[in-house]
Length: 230
Image (spheres, rainbow, N blue to C red):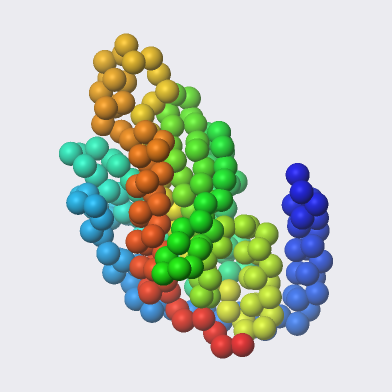
């Protein structure tokens, strides 16, 4: 582990203590456009918006959300989730997938940060390969808001504290793509063999996720409020 990673939690804590003393009153920032306006057409897939039940919404605490499932021949190929918080405080803040996914039984098999280049600008995105029993999934996620796209949770927290102190603005969105992969089971099982033919390989899933991230980073940004002037 690098020295930065070892000292990052302590650094954020100290910075937070210093900034909170001068923190402005929080300002709720409404969306510039409904999240449902984010385009649903993508690579010829059939898209359907899904409702998250009230209990899950209460736990997550988002102000607005989009949960969209993309299908091919009735098979789930990818899901897009956008959870928007018009302001953040204790009890109403983004829950990192890094912490939530293991709680749901998914274990990380690998993690990297990949650059997604749009109009010459590289945006960092978290890439996780997950396993749950024989199931496998590829997850891309990032944080988007106040004019920025970020992957590092410590950097996100620092910028949240700084902007709260300087502008009173803490709005942000978590954007997550999930692509189910062929299960890790013996090909002699007929059902598994069928899924293996229908579901993408890791390389194919990466290509799909990268294309989706390139499409939805700017699409989500257009729905978010304009950043505050400093």
